[in-house]
Image (tube, rainbow, N blue to C red; front, side, top):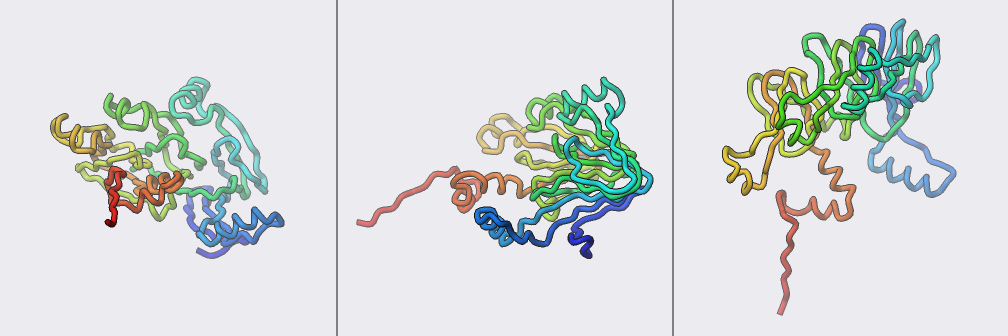
Length: 280
């Protein structure tokens, strides 16, 4: 996309009263501190870019997480509320981990949210979709028309063994949700379910349509086969709707650990054992 105000626009979604964009610096040009400049050099070489979320409002409002605002200009006013009452705010805070108070910016103008080297995912939610269920901590901002709630897992297996806890964040209504993603948007894979089932071995399902049922199930028909298959319990998604996966999330997590690159160079599924050879 074209450059704007010194930034490259890498993603944008237009909705009534708001234009939501993810912008990034094409390059950070350095620092007077030699150690910082060295880090920036390797970041630039690796293609790591500093990103921000920009929202252009036209007689509307946007909700942002506390501390997310970087700067704004125009006829804008910041307001704080419980987002639907004290009980709803308390439930949201205790169950899904979302903020107790809701920060809303009303009016007409331009808003920039805090910069990060992380990744953002813009998603337009329509009334026909029925809302989204996302991992805790993913929600970052949302336009007018969205309602952020806590959603309890519908069955015991998903709450106790699904790896996501008993509560996740629900995003209902119509509007644009700004989500913080553990991987670049290009690496997020979207699957459409039409009465079939998707099984995932791991915790890299980022979000799903509210119409999709989530549960934890045995990888095999019997517990005996499950115990010796090496797969254990799987996250399963069934019904009609969409599921978004981040298959590379675990790769980045391993790379951040000592010896992570070496572990990833071994055959997939390796138990980490090594053999030694000797020459006589």
